[in-house]
Length: 272
Image 1 (cartoon, rainbow, N blue to C red):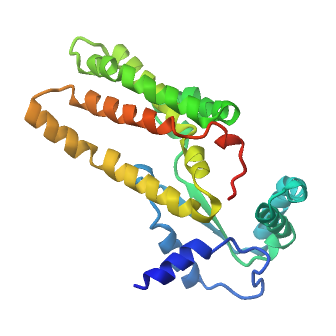
Image 2 (image 1 turned 90 degrees about the vertical axis):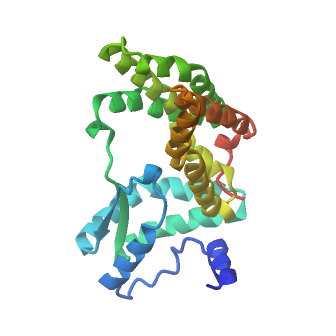
Image 3 (image 1 turned 120 degrees about the horizontal axis):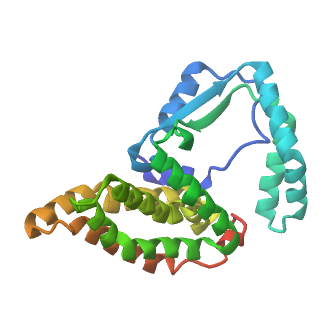
């Protein structure tokens, strides 16, 4: 493998909109190969819940283009005119140009997720609507850092009380259900702003690489190996509170890391 060529490809490739060859046919085998490569990207908890909608019908492509134009044309034109950074201006101008040509693009591949909150169990859905979505909304206004630090700090404080409720044989189903719901609410304070926070951490030229590495490494170290670490520690210490210790310690580390974030990242443009 030519590492230099791979690095050059990853660091120089940009979205191409204005120079698309709208007359060149795209074979089914090319589409399938692109999708095969796309599925190499990581998914949360290895869910692999991606789905791909491939649209080749001309009428359907025209309908999609009409929606894109009606929603984005005015905004993109204004954004391109107002942007002060040359690179950002080019991005908006390129996206605006697509409003005239999208219907002519021979294949539309639309990524989807086979995961809906309203199809989840009641506790998961309630936690999401009560915490994840509001937390994301609040973080858009006051910043990612205060919302996520609050969530991580609450995990540190509540890890042992909630674990005790779940482990206590005298606890009824209602008490355990409340404990799970509260845990979901607290975790939602980090899950809501988390994706936006990760994107805002890295400059445009290294965003996908940085986000992918950070996400994959954090899952491998703190999530993927959690079961093995906790099981081994319980075996060695005979302490059934190890899961709470693990969650509390990793959340404390998260508090320290989150405090290093810039407080105004949510207001900065996603550019270099």
